[in-house]
Amino acid sequence: MFCVKSKPARGSTKAAPVSKIGSRVRKTWRSKLADDKDLPKVLELDGIRAARWGGRTMVIARTRDVDQLIRGIRKGRTATINDLRRQLAEAHGTETACPITTGIFAWIAAHAAAEDEADGKKRVTPWWRVLKDGDKLNPKYPGGVEDQARRLRAEGHPVERGRVIRD
Image (cartoon, rainbow, N blue to C red; front, side, top):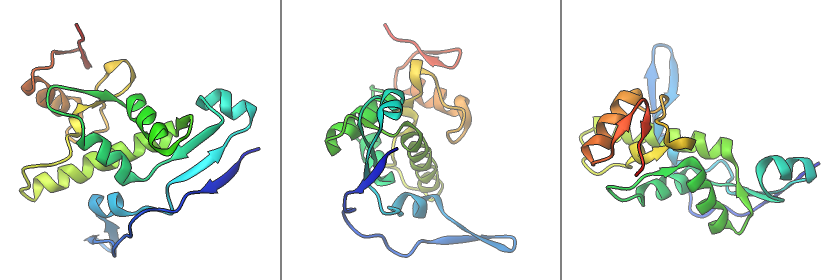
């Protein structure tokens, strides 16, 4: 059994922009990025879950926290989702960070950056620098592995067979 202890979310969210597609209204990626959903939360995990997720305390961070970490990855560098998880756990004083939400939030940040690029913005979150475990490219990011590989090669990273090659 685990219990949830909530940390108060910092900052406030504004009304979410929406786009109308057909007869339904859909949130933009930017609005999903800004939606804190009462996060961050710190979970205390029982023995089985602690062993599975890598610690007795786990943070579910905000989408904006993940976006901020990605923005901090400088040109010429890369990070994996697990690198982001370690940084989130350290920032929130927990032993681990949720792997599922961290991956989903990185995906949201990537699509929000793609929206920004489509609107003509030049400085966007460098989502292409975030890799899966094993330095693999992520097919779920905007443009798939082809676009991610193109962007990484442009920054000097060797990419072969869907992976960044390390020296």
